[in-house]
Length: 147
Image 1 (cartoon, rainbow, N blue to C red):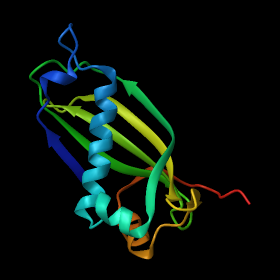
Image 2 (image 1 turned 45 degrees about the vertical axis):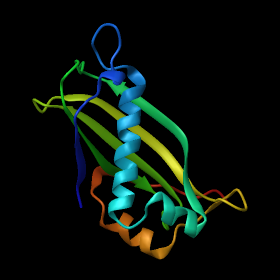
Image 3 (image 1 turned 180 degrees about the vertical axis):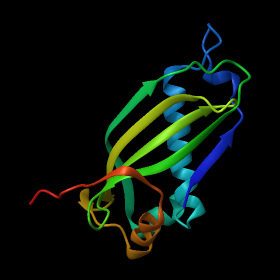
Image 4 (image 1 turned 90 degrees about the vertical axis):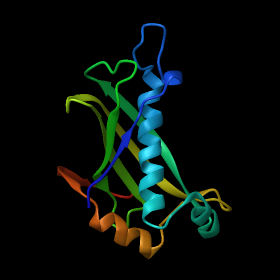
């Protein structure tokens, strides 16, 4: 399952030099994650009902090409790693310019948290099923859990 979203860029995401501000790339990546889970039946409301939420341990962005004011983009979501029951996950997002050139890559490492206990948790089986169907990178890694 490949997931990507086309976005019209907005003026508020650009700086005085008319190029996209660095934090906007990460905002688009977060929006893709949110839309992906929502498209699979896991909206923010559903997360609240399940009493779980995603947390990030790290978010690393590499910039390759400038995106300029008025240029539209495409952002995708690819699974690069996960623990056996998807308690932990690694995603890669590619931010792609209208002409197909890779502008940036965002890599995140996260987990699921029980919102009441404030402890890491395992996602429900329905979510595990979704993770298993996702596109994975050729260098997909199994994340070991610490005991």
